[in-house]
Length: 122
Ligand code: SF4
Image (cartoon, rainbow, N blue to C red; front, side, top):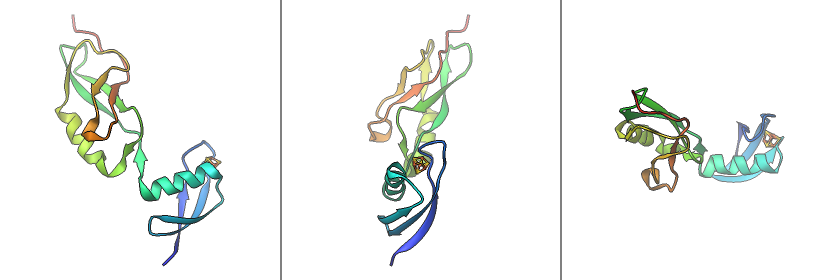
């Protein structure tokens, strides 16, 4: 049974409010959005993903934590598991920006990388 859902596209700063007609995960029609918005709607229904920012522990660093983020948008249903996993990660200082702190997180092929340097404590 087709239904229509309102969806805000976050692909660009315009933030269009789209009307998405779909049957389950299958998109039938997207109103008030461009082609990229249609792709976003399909992805949201079939494989929703989000960029994730968090922190991991650093041993011997100037600060005890370093901010990290997912190199690519991460599957939304796995985000709670990722948060749990990141609580277990500990990297030795020094940490450099863009350093991989967790490779292939949860088998997704997506690396978690540091978003800033963390020098050793003196
Ligand atoms: S539908 Fe197109 S124009 Fe609107 S926010 Fe998405 S990408 Fe931008």
